[in-house]
Length: 175
Ligand SMILES: Nc1nc2c(ncn2[C@@H]2O[C@H](COP(=O)(O)OP(=O)(O)O)[C@@H](O)[C@H]2O)c(=O)[nH]1
Ligand SMILES: [Mg+2]
Image (cartoon, rainbow, N blue to C red; front, side, top):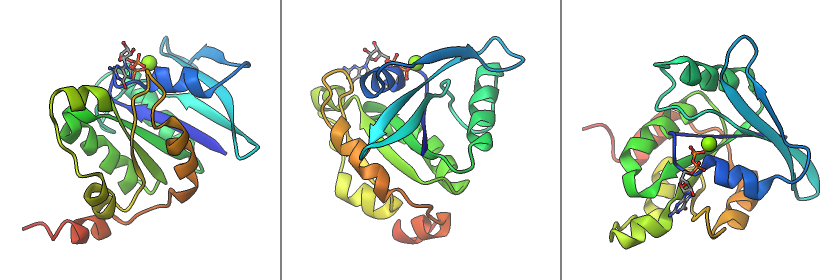
């Protein structure tokens, strides 16, 4: 299995990557660019899975070379699952990208990272309701302490493609 870590810059993707991968990590430039990315391996239920620390992007409508590489890496990985990393203290901004990735048909697990920061700011998020509406696993995480990471990885098996119409319906329609 191939798993892509995707999200805005500075949401904790690389902290996840470093915690999840062991040896055999390689850093390379994306062919024909100066944009670098890192990939490595992790074990999921005994199975070797490739994990890619994709360059940060705000959307799938790229605004610079790094974002272009992020989008290309996603489109090149049709069979991949995506860990969509969102800063829980700025959730609505990150959800936009997660929805774009879901809309392209990828199985997604959402990591609501910086859960500690959201807590310090007294930001309340109804995980169950968010999960019900999005129909994908949503796991609160604090990458720097490791909290939630095991749960996040174990929920990858529950990641399935979701129709965007289903999400709109679950949210109570567009009106
Ligand atoms: N408080 C807190 N800081 C975090 C968390 N995850 C990552 N960070 C910090 O956020 C910064 C950006 O993390 P990084 O992994 O480089 O983000 P990336 O750009 O998405 O790869 C670093 O200083 C991390 O130590 C978290 O869950 N809580
Ligand atoms: Mg990074």
